Length: 448
Ligand SMILES: Cc1ncc(COP(=O)(O)O)c(C=O)c1O
Image (tube, rainbow, N blue to C red):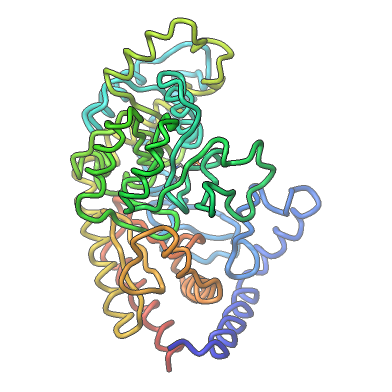
């Protein structure tokens, strides 16, 4: 249905327009190249549909403005790091209070904010005991170590095409004889088959077969895949995962870093899940680095029973700045005042409107749209993919780049990874409609 020549021509046209409109971003990028690895502060920033990254000048609420003075409606929201909106006032006030008025960004002392946040995360996710990290990646890493500690088992199980941050064990896809490294895996410490088993999302029998080996300490999964497009669980799948993990003495981590979009307590609360561990990061501190993992009372007891494990010093769990005063003041303010129960209602309503707009625009095209609370994603396949591998197979770089740069040239940003749009508490219906109109126009030109 898509004419590839036409797509290439339009993509070239849009990239040329992008270059014309962004001389200052282009110059800043060129100036940075001698000093930054890959020319960017973090190498993934080279994933830029327009050919080079837009440089940030300022951001507020659901808007960002680049160095060339163009303002965008931002549905990328820092790939969830800014789900609370950019610089939400309550979070900024807490940061200023902590850093400037009170003083003390990081010390070696706890603050009272930590217990408040722990209690609030308990209310939302149902797990009573919490510990803090700086990133979701670290929350996953440390949770995996604790799972290995208490089960005495070496491996973890992940879903094919999952993403849980730069967790060594998780870069695995199914091979002919077990897990193999995902393409592009950088400097793997050991063969991933030694650390990992893989099952497709929504494949109960596949997971049962892998768990039957009896060597899996923990299943690390998202309640819905979000990093290869959204892949929603089929009815009964998550119940089956919980039943199987219990039967096999395997622990279960729900990584809610992205599925937090499902509601104030993520998918765990929204769908009544009962994981042993929840991990989270990104959005909870309004953009300030902060992550957390929560454990069940039973697991907390099992951890405490391992008196020989060094949980205090150099045992492999912990970070100097983890649980710092600034992160926790920002987390408290964000949870108390910004990403509140009420806020999720509006965010989800905006996302529903967004999904309806995309559905109408794609019309007869064999594409699909999925929604996870405040998060929406479209894939170039229909019906919606049921596994990570099916979703991966539906990727289309040129098509994604065309849509991303077309939207950017007209003042709308979606995440540079796949086709994800996220609603903040201050995203409006008008913002959503602006995307719908621009997206519809991009498709009209493509299919004309
Ligand atoms: C589900 C999930 N978990 C963990 C992470 C890691 O987050 P961070 O890179 O902030 O450590 C990500 C990042 O995209 C993620 O999507």
